[in-house]
Length: 135
Image 1: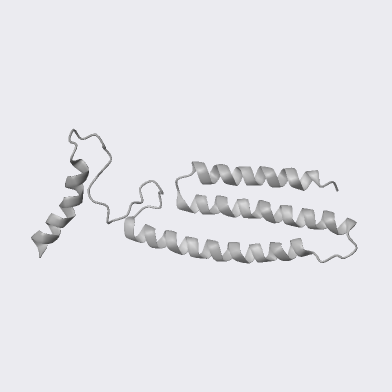
Image 2: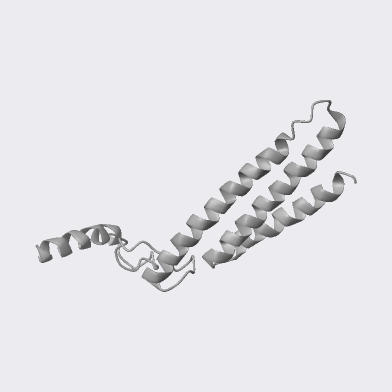
């Protein structure tokens, strides 16, 4: 088999995963897209390992060993990633990446032009005033 077939398939898989990471807003779908990109890399590693082992005298199969290492890292990544997504979903009620914001952010700063030049100063002083009022 020619090297071009798995290389083209790997490029298509990687581009599909990249599109999924850039276009999706659900955290689980983003994790699935990252896994697709890692599988494309694994396919490239194995294909080039087989291609290089045909020409080399020593067949160490380092590409296949690196693929096994990548699969182990990907399994750990997806496990930790899903745990984080589930914890965030329990706390916030959504897995939408755009709606996830830090709870320490003061107020709703969606409108940067609120008509006053001291908007950033008042946003900084509000948490201090709230802390003084509760103390």
